[in-house]
Every structure is written in C-alpha cells, then in structure tokens.
Image 1 (cartoon, rainbow, N blue to C red):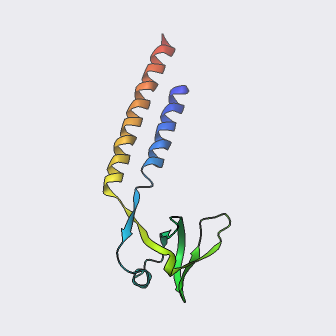
Image 2 (tube, rainbow, N blue to C red):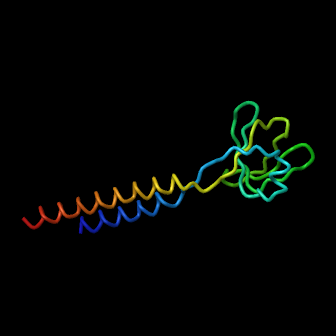
Image 3 (cartoon, rainbow, N blue to C red):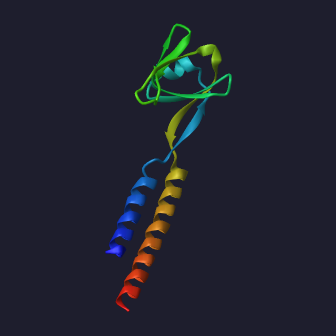
Length: 124
C-alpha cells in the first residue's frame, strides 16, 4: 500500500511540474500598441516605484491602464500610463518545459526505486 501511495504522489507531482511552463517577457512595443494588438490576457506592469501589478483583461482608459487584479475577490485597478516603467507578457518557454519534464522523470524514477525498496523490505 505504501508503494502505491509513493507512486501516486510521484504522478501527481509530475502533473504539477509540467503544467506551468511559462515565463514573463519584457515587451518593447508601446503599451497602447500591445493592447490594440490583442494582448488582452494578462500583463505584468512594473511601476515607477518598482512595485509590480498583474492586470487581467487590460484596457486603456484616458491616461491610465485599467484591469482586474488577481486578488480574491478580483479588484479593479487603474495605473497612470506615466507611472509605467515596462510591461511584460506571459509566453510559453520550451526551456522551462524541458526542465520540468527532466525533473519529473527524476522524481518518477526515484519514487519507483523507493517503491521497489519498500516492497523488498516488506517481503523480507
């Protein structure tokens, strides 16, 4: 039973490590251009005071970028365009995916090895 739990834990960990293989990329295009070009998902905005705000479904209203935060419950946030230092968008990362798959393989092999050891000592 313990070996089965160990293997189940390894499979669950494998699913978690390969699901979030993304990274933030600094965008050089002006913010109005980014939003007009369809980047309406999620933006990571660094402000002039070095604070970071993640906005979902951003739009530009007058002289501010407006969107909802990841707070629970989501809250509306408006950031003056003059306060924005740079903007980042989320992109899939091949390198992070490969790292995640490699780590997952190591965990599964380790869990399988541990399961076999536990079975051997249980039988003896």
